[in-house]
Image (tube, rainbow, N blue to C red; front, side):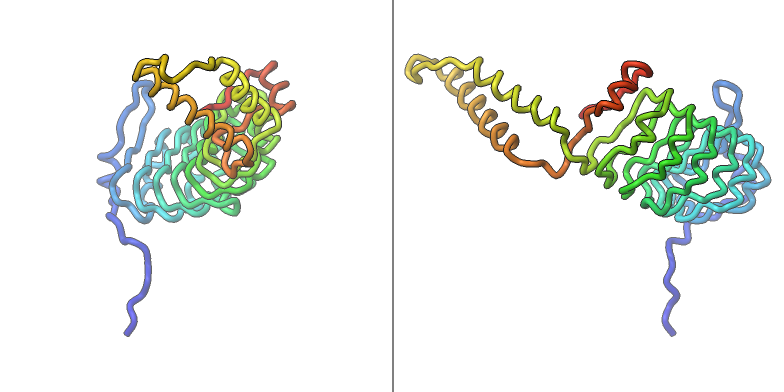
Length: 260
């Protein structure tokens, strides 16, 4: 008889283990820390401690977040990073007190991001980095309290304008996405090449000491590499530069876009 296929069984978490894993944070909140415990399935016994304000299930083997997560009505902080989650449940939109949500380093795609995420009206920080997301629902623009958004290491080819228009956004990380460079970005790179070329002086090699010859050879090699790169259209851009819409936001709201 063929064996049934399935994921890792993981460690079984009992109510006693859960209660013993509750800690008090520096500001007096109750945090249930079940991180790094090889959990594959979130046990339903956690409903007995659903009054906690913070829940850490990071660095486990979790593939699915149950719909009953909505019962954690006091929760303000939810950390699910470094698991195997493919979909965020629609019921997460019922967590109206949630301020922090981290689902970084999972297996999320565009289909795994529900439009109900837009119901988290008080959300301040959202981390979706290190997934395979190539598009985001425009409804994320409804999260008016968002201050930090992590979208790094995904498959995005553009940053949704709805995110750039968030009124309180201060930090947006889009590093290592296949976002094409803007005309302004290409122009700046070419100007840098010209500036460096103008700073060179022609001298005879025999008039230079050995360390200076080595330094000149290194600089010449760098210039050749920059010239080669400027003639290509790179598939990956480490960071987008703000377009006209983003610049307006920066002048009014102060959006900070991270650089490598």
